[in-house]
Image 1: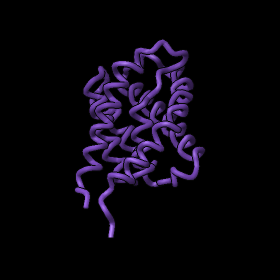
Image 2: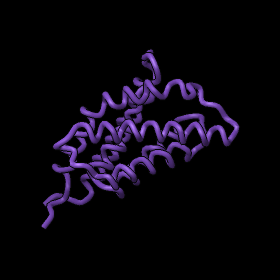
Image 3: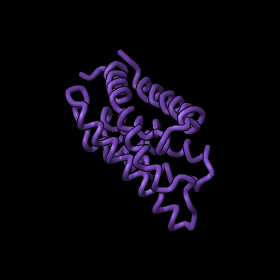
Image 4: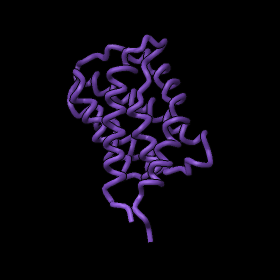
Length: 165
């Protein structure tokens, strides 16, 4: 019988790896449009595979870690990612049978998180370095990452989930 902490530990490692990869590699790539947001794709994938609670917790933790490593107000990305993970978890699609549903969910989450982030920054009287011009590129790159991230998270979730009786 597997331990109940294995999925949480695996998600924590995946979040840390995604944040490090996002901040050290992906954000610095000279890609046309905006940079991809691997952390958001991971949050949506965890929500789709693990449900609303897992998506909410992962989104908040990943967003808070991202906030702590950036110059914007702490809690902003944590709130946006938590809502995105929660909504993805409510939709909890069968990620093994379809590729289109997770791609649509990632695209919608990227747009919603991007617009919410920019709106709150605007309310606080701050501006984003990229602005809204980077959003279409980020959506495209996130959708391109989806077929790689979502099946891996779903497979890991099945493998690490505690045995159900």
